[in-house]
Image (cartoon, rainbow, N blue to C red; front, side, top):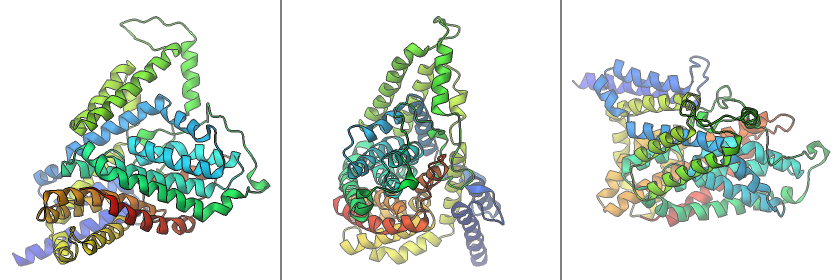
Length: 480
């Protein structure tokens, strides 16, 4: 029996190691199958190695998280079609008062949009806007791109729908949308302010001196920048150079096609209800009303998965067209990744290794002591950069909550909020720390004629002090 347990421990560790390697290095030469397939491989190996039964593997998959993720991706796609992100881009240049003002605006808009539409979506949509604004004003792109990526990560901490790890935490903890928002918002706001001030302090000289002729001024058309993006197709974890950016038809082409279709008068009929170009404003208003209703419902404490999927379905009905084109833009590779990850992490938990490591650390990680919070924060910070933030949440979440619950119920809630805060802000540490960072880097390098490469070391130079400062300040403000 002891030998069988020892064999399962080794085999389970091998399966988890394969999952980890493919999650961190999806194009590893020996097996370049990507994160989604790598996640499935890890899960299947847990079953083949008899760490889990087939039934246990199915039970490990959290359908509520998958439904919530699917619903938010569909809603994001309809928001993109309703030009919500284009309007956010316009706010960046409206009555701007200089480079430092632009930095603050980018931080604010990136944070707000990330809290509502996820950090990856915001970075996917806003990167080209930000780069063109920097080039237009003959300013160096680096501080603006850093502002976008870092603020997106910080802003996404504020809500359960801001990033994937928050979705997991909100679902597993039972903390309501309103409680989550109230508990973490003060840390988010002050962290955002400190991040912006650090940017201005570190790059003040660059922001006050315009660059030379090599960065010539470009025309910026606030009404129709030609983008190629689709938020729903942007995986929160698919960050390889090959599949990071899913190119679809541009926003301008969509608008032109709608206008061309609207040129002919098409009557309303039950056989084919049709929104012509004159009804676009009404349709957009309906989209915004549905999204606001979704947010209000979440704040009122309604089930998050049910609310998200209901909002997505309402938008499909309001569109009054075949929903297949929209559904095709959902990142199913992300959903597959989550399925495999749930099974893999559950199998790794069965080996007993995470429990043994937690038992060693638990005496030094008491959440009612300052030293304990520091230890927890450091462990989360390191793990989030080594194995990524979502697996870190799955490995530590229940254990942290159970340990904190022995002290009091209030501390249990605080444990979840600490995990949400640190695992997300940890993404700012390095360029590889979060998908949002890599999205900004990839998008900026691909802009025709204006491309800029944000290097690993340039990001690290700002990322390390920002992460440590913002994490520490936030831990002081989290409310239980």
